[in-house]
Structures are given as C-alpha cells and as structure tokens.
Length: 406
Image (cartoon, rainbow, N blue to C red; front, side, top):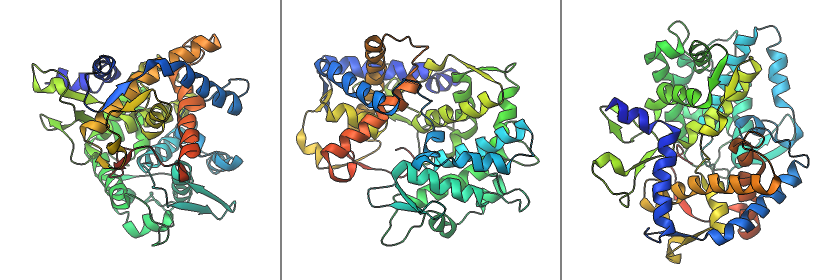
C-alpha cells in the first residue's frame, strides 16, 4: 500500500488520473462536462492579453501567496524583513515558511460578502487578497506565536490555543461581514498545531513550528531540490490536518476524490488526487528557499491548480461546457462527481493552454513554466472574465465549501 500512497501523492498521479478523465471527455463519455478544443486558441489569446496587460515585458513571478502580500502597491514583506533584520538567513526562511503555510491554510474561498479594511493603508481588500492581508497583519501581531519575545512565528502551542474569537477579530468578521468557513479554518490551524508535535522529525521537538520544515528540506539535498521534493515534504508533514478525507492504511490522502467513470480493477483506480492547496503551498515555499540559496529544479513537475478561477475561465470561455444547464443553479459539494470532473478537466486543460501560450509567444517551458502561466495568466484571466459576466465576480458554479479545498 505504501507504493500506492506514494503514487497518489505524486504530481505524476495527478496528471495521469486527470488525463484519463480528459480523454473520456474528448470522446464525450463523461456525465457532466464536454470539452470543446476549438475554443483553446481563443482562450489562449485572452490569457496572453491579460499577461501583457499586467506584465508587458513578460517577466512574470511565480504564482504564490507572496503576490497577494503585495496587493494595493504596498510592500508589506519589506516590513517583515525590517523586523527580521537581526536574525540569520536560515531563521528568516523559517519565519517566511511559518507565514506562507498559515496564510495558505487560511486561503479557502472567503465568499462574496466578506471584505477586510486594512487600517495601516486605509484600503479595502476582498477574497484571496483580503485573506492574505488579514493573515499577514495577524502574523505580524503575534496571533499564532506563543513566544511574546518573538511574535513573527507560528508554533504548536500558539496554534492549538487559537480561538474562534481571535480569528474572527483578525478577519473583522461581523454579522454584516460574514466569512465562509470560519470554524473550518480554525479547526485546520488547531489540527496543524497538534500535527506539529506529532512529527518531530520534520517540525522539531523543542519548538515545533511549520518553519522547521526548512531544516528537513535542507537535509535532503545539497542546496538543490526538485519541486516534487518540496511537495512531498508538504504532503508528508501536513497530510493529517485535512478533515474527513479518504484514507488508506490509516494514512489521510488529503485532496483525493472518487470518480466512477474511471474503470477499475482495484477500487483505488477510481481515485483522483489534486492536492490543490498543497501545491499552492509548495509554490509559495519555493521563494523563501531560493532566498536561502537553494536551487529549485524541475518546476514543471507540479500541476496547475484545480480551483474555481482556473476552472471558471474554461467554463466561461466555452472550453468546458456543462451538459445540463440546470447544474448552474444547484450548489455542489466539493466531493461530488460534477466538481471532481470539473477539477480534473481543469488540470489537463491548464497543461494544454500553457503549451499553446508558449507556442504563440515563442517561449520554452523553462522560460515560461506553468507556475508563471498561472500567475500571469489563467488565474487572473479567470477572475477578469468572472467579473465581466457576473456581479461580484462569483464563480460560474456554486460550491458548498468547508474552507479546506477551494
């Protein structure tokens, strides 16, 4: 079973299983969606225009949480760097791991009615950026640290003692400013605090904190790591935090779901892994490692992120088409076959649109890796087309999220 678990935690498995569904879609053999590849060209052009608008020289950074910390033309990370001026580069990397991991785990969909007013800049932010700024401000104030002398960390004790009141205050939640999945987010962080103490080989025994994963990774390579190695560390270290998921031999599989269209010899043949938040987190951990002088190789091993901006882009531009329009009116659980199908097709289409975009721009996969296509392009384009088509830029599908998937 260990081989199966290792496989399901690999980017290869994500691609292979998603492509199996994609090939069924090409033959119109899926229950919920069909694919229209004649729309790929138009979709690529739309994304390229968005990329050129935001990055005219096509010098695009990684798609990661660090972009959200820069929203509103405010260099918040420079404030963190200033606070850490006296600490070592290794400790600074650990702090940035702490911040990125906490902020990403809090980054499930906020809902259309929530916003965050940042007193320091008098700006208002919503959705992912709002969650990023709110979690950054909480981090700077020591909300996740049990050490009064060092507020800029998240540690096991601080996370386990976090209260819903503290979290809601940090996110400015009121009856008029509701946040989707607040209790789910709290449970996730409290569970993380517990898991940190259970894996001393990754998170340290003396002061268990997410940032100690830096040491664990440095021990794996001589300042060189593949992107998949970082993802594997994230899945191994944080896999137990996800609530109520499928398990094999008591191992929590995380963001892994079932689709009955996949033929089975074994029951596990119908499992489709996505590891969306874990990959988003992995992308967000690469930059602190690079700052530490670690070379990250094989970036394109990781897959695109199957979330509602990327998936919404394909649905809104007609690359994906729902077979039953009534499904647009229903609310779908994250584990429903319709949502699993949508996410799988999104992963496969992201690879194909990235290839088409590179072809049109005459760039290689090294020059324009998928992580930059996501940032420059598909995620931003998904949000843009949603705003053009629907009030508030809501996704095209209604998802019943518990705050731990989308």
